[in-house]
Length: 275
Image (cartoon, rainbow, N blue to C red):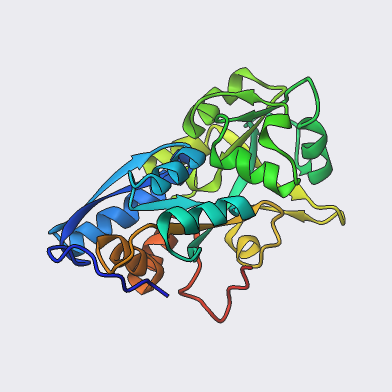
């Protein structure tokens, strides 16, 4: 439930200006939702900034952002700090199914990758996995998946998901790690150009089953690195922040999510089995 604390009299869901912060891995869907909301409500202004996931959370706690987009689960300590500083219960507003995907050059002979291989690579000095940086959503999510601290993992870095895709041809022995949302827009010329440069690897789980990062496998959480995107806010009244969140989680917003090539969390409620 959204908190009903009294806010600024002049601000309501259709009028006001707030800052939204998201990890660059979620840029496409966040930007599309913000643009759609502002088209519906011209007097509402969403200033969208892109920072590493951990920095976004700090901005929320310090009041520098009204809404943030997250994918990893907050730790018990982080939830306590959130409740203490924001004075709201931790209540993530889930809105999309995304995934962390593994890519290789288009001409690579590799056809899939095992979950066990990924874990081994993260402990190897060869640093064969390429992430977009420290404290960012892709690394955070993978670390949480393996119950590991990000600082203990070994990997290479190329800044930015798109830069990883564009440079994979120079690293035939490496595997890039990016967000599905980077390449998921079906008809986007930019996304099409990126997809043409790389091969997306299916992932073999611990039982020997292979799953592609397709929406049907994300919907059922069968692809091993499926993840849920959600909003957090520090807005204790029904202003632009909570208005934007509600908009994104209801039908019009969920159609936007679908057009971004991601799995809507709410629109197909009887089918979606996300946990």
